[in-house]
Length: 130
Image 1 (cartoon, one colour):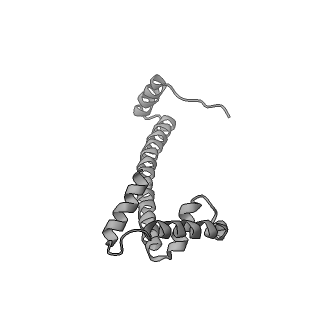
Image 2 (tube, rainbow, N blue to C red):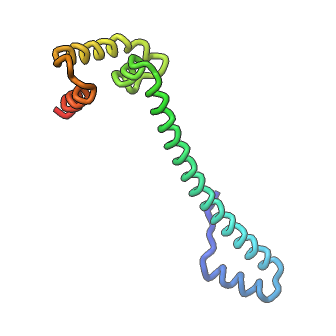
Image 3 (cartoon, rainbow, N blue to C red):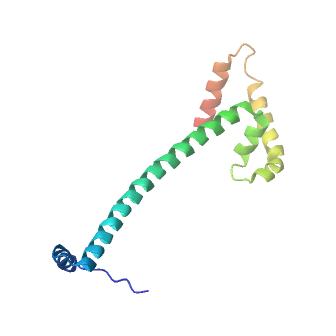
């Protein structure tokens, strides 16, 4: 299909003829104006849809993070060990997740017995930053 586009001077001539009561030209000019209006409307709707999609995606991320807080540590650790694994393959990584949890426990054990949760968390965060 060939892409024919009218030049601005052709549209100006079409509008002149339409103003002289040429019905065929009036119809063409009206169709052009309607198409332009629809195009603008579609662009506005597309922008609105993109904003809505972004809002829904952000809400889903928040809901997913809230859901993760309620699930067992082993499940959360499994996803941390294998973030790109397909959901049906996550069980294959539970051994690694358990080993990671054991390493953290072994790391925490030598801490003094009266260490607060805040002190343990701070020590863990320092390990992440090192």
